[in-house]
Length: 377
Length: 223
Image 1 (spheres, rainbow over the protein chains, first blue to last red):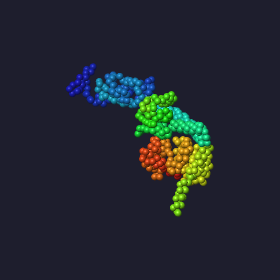
Image 2 (tube, chains in turn red, purple; image 1 turned 180 degrees about the vertical axis):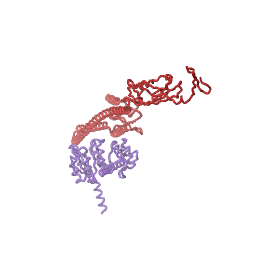
Image 3 (cartoon, rainbow over the protein chains, first blue to last red; image 1 turned 90 degrees about the vertical axis):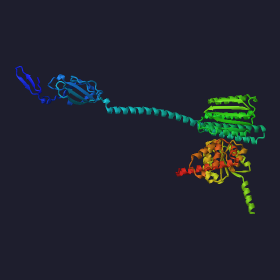
Image 4 (tube, chains in turn yellow, orange; image 1 turned 180 degrees about the horizontal axis):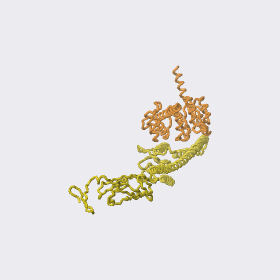
């Protein structure tokens, strides 16, 4: 029983009345200590928590037992904890369970805060900090990871480099092969050029000598034919070399070369020639095959005109947009006036030439013959 | 009296036959040229050589007006032969005698100091005409050679005054490169074909001077 002055009176079994002076000191001077009694890590038991702070990643299931001896009803003590460093760092619900169970802790640094509350005994609550580390396995250590990163990076670089080097080597070897073919082509051409050219020139000079020294009209006529033929062969050789020389692989070269040939040929054959070119000729690559076929189409067309058309004038027009078109228009007698079947054959050859380089070839009558050849650029 | 003598000397010099040497390895062609030139009184054939080595030795002594020079010769070629004797034959014009007009070597020869070329397919009567024309300063130039000349002059931006082309010379070159005939160029620029030839002759001269300067610069280490 407690009276107004907060003095308790107690009656003993023997009938004595006991007066108990309440001294606050009695309560407050005793502070229960909170400590870890044992840590069970896997199968190993550590009884001294201070001696162990590092746990292997293999022993990452910890049971930490705590106690707070308070000489009062210890079952009433509630424990609550907070584990910083884990995914859940909330304070746990206070519970009477003194064994804190941590399952499958990831490697890392942890700080465990434990709080003991004494709701019945009324002691002030106690706090305990316990720091520990779960050491990562070797393959999760930073040095291993960085080494692994470097290794993978090196591997990637190696593979990529190998790939590109291989590709480059393949490219180089194909280029070398191409260059060798090109070189051989030029060598054959140049041999042909020099040797055949010299031979033909000799032939021409000899024929001219024969012509001068002969009194027979027929011999002179034949010698003249040899001269003309050998000159034509030299011209043809020149055209082959021109087509083979990759320095001439542009649209410009084709147009100017053709123009120069046409003007000269028409002049020699007393044919009035009007050539129209676009003002600006785009700088475009054009293979020797295309150049040769277009040039020969113009050349053979002019030859046909001189031979068969009885024309006074020829107009040659180059048009360039996405395609190259060459239009050759003479003012001769046209197809209708020609009986020659060979002319048809020649035209078919021209058509084949232009179609072999993906172009289009057509002819039409219209105050003479209009020949139109178009090739893609 | 003095004037008469002067006129006589001038006339004599003017009428004097053009002194020619031939360098050509093919016997038939060489003989063809020999018979052509010996029959023509406007020319005086001094010597004909079958190879460049012999020609290089003797040309300096002959000092001809014109050398008809083949390009492909058995040992030393015609281009090297020109390089060798050019400085010691200042008055001599070297004319290349070539099969093909578009030959790289023709351009090389022109850079080395040749003042023109004659194609081997030219008929014999026209060869003499060409020689006379060349003597008077006219030179031929094909489309492809014009292109090469343009490239050469364009690539050397820092060329000295001696080798800079005049505006007219440039115009002539550009038209030639586009495949125009002399006749057309003359009409377009309102000049005579003779003037066109004269321009081309001067261009060849500048090409040679530039080529030589470049060679000297290379030797002395200047850029």
